[in-house]
Image (cartoon, rainbow, N blue to C red):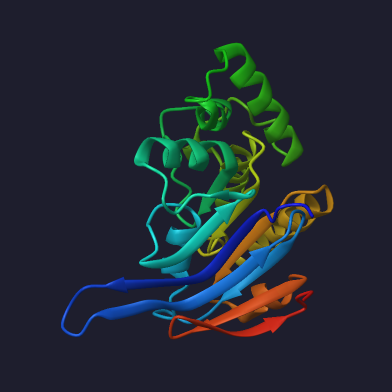
Length: 229
């Protein structure tokens, strides 16, 4: 049986305090290779904490996280960073592009710690920018690109290392409706090409456009729609 792209097993996350905050409450989720799914929920539901745990940016209090069959929740910081850089691609609402760098160099920076040569990094970056429809904008700076184009650069950067899974956190949150639709169309196209993508969103309309939806309320998964059991 092939390993899942990502799997949470009975994961809880508790933040200390009086009283302590149970941000995740015994959550289990399996994401297969090639899936496109959404985690949807209101502010405070736990979906951001879940993103941080899935992306290895935070460790679970209980339970385990597996990425491509590797149990990562107990790895040391150095090995965990290696798994994160090699197997997870991130797309954020705020883009996080270097303003003084071209689209090409922003994407190539996604391979900065991979040990590949500068020429190879730039070649692979150009390939991914062409894949997301920006082959004609390689040398433009972020302030010369529209919001939708900047998010496409961020998607290309997430894909450049051929990750096991792309985690997209509110990827349309800073976009107008036209750009939002274009980015979602892009994610559907990438899914059809075989990419594994998980979208975190508070917008039910975005979630409902995806093949599978997982709803979070109060740190628990309360609904699985379209999920194969």
